[in-house]
Length: 175
Image 1 (cartoon, one colour):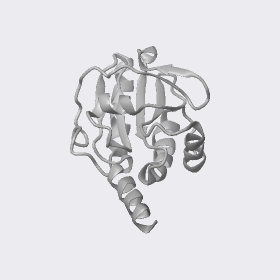
Image 2 (tube, helix red, strand yellow):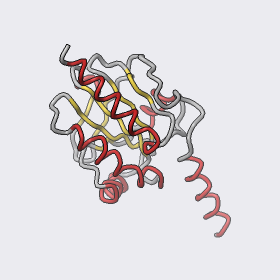
Image 3 (cartoon, rainbow, N blue to C red):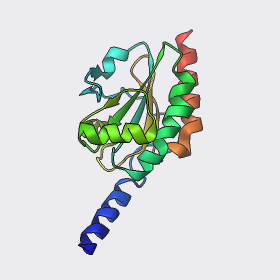
Image 4 (cartoon, rainbow, N blue to C red):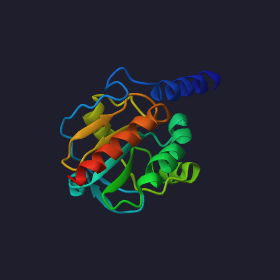
């Protein structure tokens, strides 16, 4: 039993480590954001292209990922709550571990996230990062559906860059 626990811990740790793919923190790829449609934990359906004209923050997380569980509150307080009153902003969380609704509810309970959590989103992670082994990542999509920020580190390492990207994208709405 002990080797199984060791393997599981190693898998979870490796699954939550920074990936060599993706852009450096602060880089802006300026490429079209891959569209997606996923069901939410609350039962609705969300399609990224439905938010054209708004700035969208995406939090790619694994519902069982320890780093994601500790950084989820960062996305809620430092990003979502900061911009939630702006009608031109939306935040979405995407569970890339494809865990059950009950696992995602547990994730929501632990993190305090109030924005929509989308289920079965591993393919979206692959579409954005080219791998299914990157978790705890932030992406900002502007009103035109273009990626203006794509982090390659844990959320807590790039929150200032994410906030700056959102502010810049929101300021472009007024032009």
